Length: 371
Image (cartoon, rainbow, N blue to C red; front, side, top):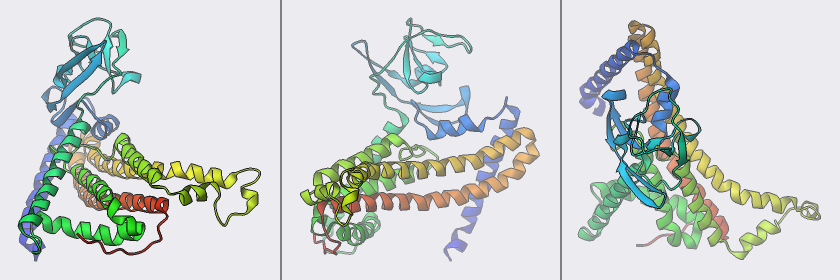
């Protein structure tokens, strides 16, 4: 019934998407050429501006603040001064080659267009770079939206106590209850209330940014949870929470693992060494799993879109033909990425709860959480 009710809207959306992508493929066939590698890398990596649409001089980009501390001076200007990396401003330019992704200070205070093929001498790389990049901007937006959502939900509990949830409250409450009863309580036992706020924050932060990364238009489209620095910090926080929560039995089992033959401990401490390595590999696995799954999904989706441009520059008819298949697989992968977004947030939270529970030395038991 739902499908029949909204089928005409879905059909119209598919046709519109088909026409837009076909037009882009025909435009690509008239350009100098399309290179899928830089196209994909540009969309999954961080940048100093938020690209909206278009290419080259015709592109529409939201400029972001460039904040530098260089030679004892605080330097501030907008990223559009770089003109997509093709210009310098007061001697500052976007790095190239081995310095790509950095901001460099040229040997002089040159301002203007950077000629292609000309070697501009670089004085130094700006090490203290606190610019508001695309990922930083996406992080700020997500924090504001998450805070607004949960403050709104908390307000509903105060205004409507002991009543059936509705609106955002009806969406968030079942998820929180499920995580409390099926993930946090069994892993942490009597310590569950202590770590519930941290684990819920972890879950909703990852989930929200996974979903925001699937939205192709502003304020979505940033690959925040596909940035290994972000997943690394999340894993590092879990690592420190786990270690600082560890009781003496936890450290004793690492040094003197029970149930292991003595000849694996003396004279060569094989098992203690393995256990110590495991302490560091657990957060590493958390970091890589989230980063790899989210990034791989974006690369596959962009790969299907790239096929339209690649075949479109061979022949317009091929671009039209391949676009049907590419858009179908694009939609399929988008729904699959939607599922992966929930799974990865759940897995990261589940493993974090298990690691913390093991450090606390709690037996697996269900705990009825009360307000």
